Amino acid sequence: MNENTYTEQKVDRRRALVQFGGVAATALGAGAWGAKELLEAEEAEAAGTGPAAVASGLVSCVLAPEMTEGPYYVEGDKVRRNITEGKTGVPLTLRLTVVNVSTCKPIKVAAVDIWHCDAGGVYSGTSVQSTEDLRFLRGIQKTDKNGLAIFRTIYPGWYTGRTVHIHLKVYLGGNTVHTGQLFFPDTLTDVVYRRSPYNQRSSRDQRNATDSIFRNGGKRSMLKLAKSGKGYVGRITMGVARS
Image 1 (cartoon, rainbow, N blue to C red):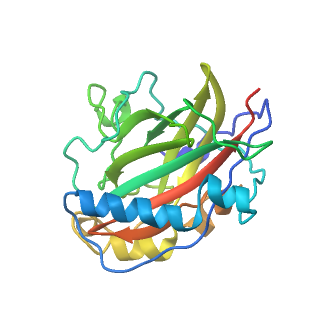
Image 2 (image 1 turned 90 degrees about the horizontal axis):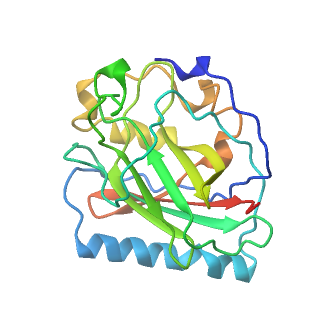
Image 3 (image 1 turned 45 degrees about the vertical axis):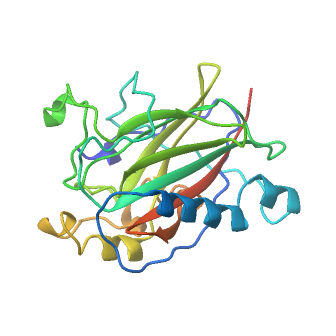
């Protein structure tokens, strides 16, 4: 199904994203994450992002548009960090930070809900693809005292009519305070898709520049990616209005 047929929801409150651009595109591979890789990811983040960077003035909050929820949202996703459920692909750890857009201070116990397709372009939980009873590559995490939610997943695949992306919602006190999508640099995706299982499909039909949803704020929703072991770590900070 082509998500370009879905209109964007009206914005009923101030919301924002803070993003950190850039990518390290080097050798890729599939495999298990270990303590060493996770430690490398944490050290990479501590070097130049997070609350300390905000306090130092290195980064600041900027407003960005909401993005369409899309057709594959499912209520009641599992609260879990590892959402792979055996799906193969290049390992991806997401480090998603939620801050107050007015102050850039981290928000504790915000619920971050993500979902995306597998390497073959299939979503779980949808009758359109006969996956109603499955819940792979979906999950919720609550932010810690630093506003950080961590997910363990794989690099998303693609499907007709859309560039590569991850769907996301942020909830505070049961209310949705942000609906958005996270994007990947095309140059990195080109490298990833040369590997199995991604290379078992034909070339994707959309890139960021031709994706109608990306054109409405996608540059400010781009993950900052860094190599870690056999996979990647993606980071972004999302500024939201608490009320």
